[in-house]
Amino acid sequence: PLSADYFFRNDNAADRVTFLGVIINVLLSAGKAAVGVTCHSSALIADAGHSLSDLFSDFVTLWAVQVARLPPDDDHPYGHGKFESVGSLFLSLALLATGLSVGVSSYVKFVRTVSLQRSAGIAAAAKLVEVPTWPALVVAGISIASKEWLFRITKRVGEKLNSQVVIANAWHHRSDAYSSVLALISIFLAMAFPGFLAADPAAGMLVAGMICMTGAEILGESVKQLTDAVTDEQILKNVQTVSSRDADVKEVTRVRARQVGSSALVDVAVTTGPDLSASAMRAVEERIRAKIISDVDGVLDVDVKATGEDVVFCPLMTAEEVAEMEHKISATEVEEGGRKVLENHPDVKSVEGVTAHFLDTVTVRVDANIRVDPNTTVLQANSLAKELRKLLEESNEDIEQANIFLDLNMERPTENRNKVLSQ
Image (tube, rainbow, N blue to C red):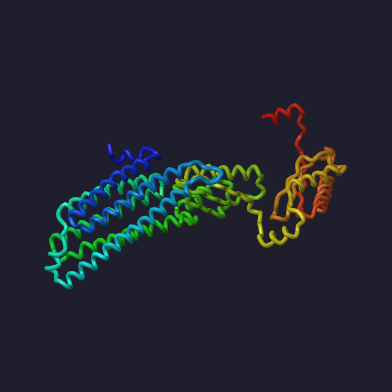
């Protein structure tokens, strides 16, 4: 049955409601054109042209929806969602072209009618100009009812799927309903009051203006999406809220989104506490990403970047200093070099770990965990740490600061250590 629920069962709802629009527009275009010609109504003929443009928009909608569903490929790594915006752009241009065509033809008839009334008089003009008849009223009424119903269910499907091209097509149906209302009024006035013969072409010009306004509005929305302008502020607010709830996030520094068809691609930058490890940063990013995708409607994918709050990057300093450097700083090179310096010291029993932390793009802090002789006193350990810090800072000009930590964990037997690693 053609009930409203029939059209909202799954993602193919856009196809079903658009096919229904094709059938209705074919019937209305043929009916309005035939009755408009036989019943002498220019407004109804103009309305038939509008219904015909609706038929074109239905096919554009079907094409755009089908292409937008295609998965990402080598040529379109972010998917094909933008084709919905391309479809909306074509629909807006079709509306503008229809509006201009209807407006020009109605204006020509309006000028001809007014000139005839002035030269021959209103009564004589009424006899010379053919007056619309009652079947035109009936067809206009049918058009209003059918197009308004089609607008409501199409808009509901578009909002449920968050599909801009389906919503644009719905407003195309609504503009046709409005034009039928004006056609109905103008036909009635022309029939009831012969002196108002100019009302019919005047209504045609009003219809043309409404069509052009709708087309311009849809055109603006399509251009926004194609140029990555912000189209939904609520998505940004929701992403900001969800990101800030994470326990490790100190501040959400940036949220950006760009529309790709019915969904959005989101970029988020957050600041965490100082000295979080790389694995902890990664965990924060994945946690926020999963939470945004699950809690925020209309998000296709999220890219989250987490940085420590003690890391400050100066773009100007970075550009100048990196340009002067013969090579860029490598964390691996810094860590391997620091490990060699520590292992070469006779008082270091073993080096358990060396980690490089970037203070900015061109300066590094090194944290090292070492083991020394168990009989070493606290005073001797402090003196050794001071010596090792100096050696590390002098060994590499990129090292701004070095920290030495004593590993006091008892050595595990080899079997237990391998067991732990295998777990």
